[in-house]
Length: 94
Image 1 (cartoon, rainbow, N blue to C red):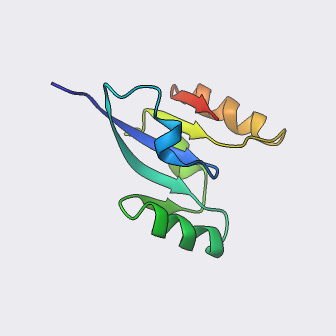
Image 2 (cartoon, one colour):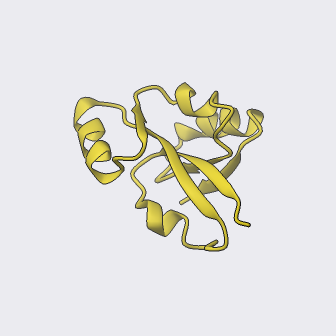
């Protein structure tokens, strides 16, 4: 029996690459953060199964999300990382 892990994506990762290290589990991309309308449109095309959100808190505060992928982090993302960890979520930084 396989485990389904709900995932939130913050950044511009290619999801398949981000999750390639563990093929034994099934991943469900639940939410993707998009900071503007252009990014939201691209994200919706790339990840039609996911809910596109414009607030990172929607991912961090979602109790159903177990893993957050933080892609291409910058120095500004250190606070985001702190909030993700404080919420008890696993993080994959790529």
